[in-house]
Length: 89
Image 1: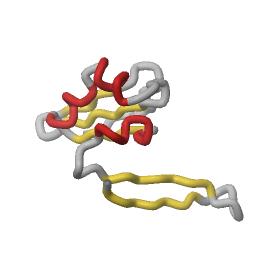
Image 2: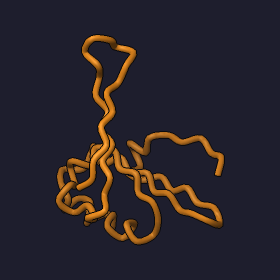
Image 3: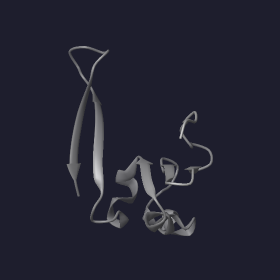
Image 4: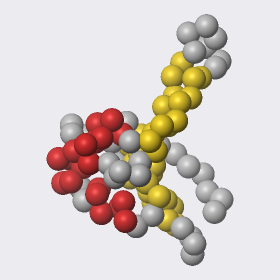
């Protein structure tokens, strides 16, 4: 699957599919909480394919148990570097 990927800030979710896999890229920054996520049917995507969620902490209570979190933080000593931490729920 070779496509340009952009943040779905104004559409909440972008969908990328081919005959092998479906990827759902969410940006939930504009949602207030997990209730807003339910209102758009967001939880239905968890069973359909891979979900990549920006600002996932907003809906953390409803994320599946197998969620993997990837956090990016600025490195205060060098603005060109990022600290990346990966952990599970």
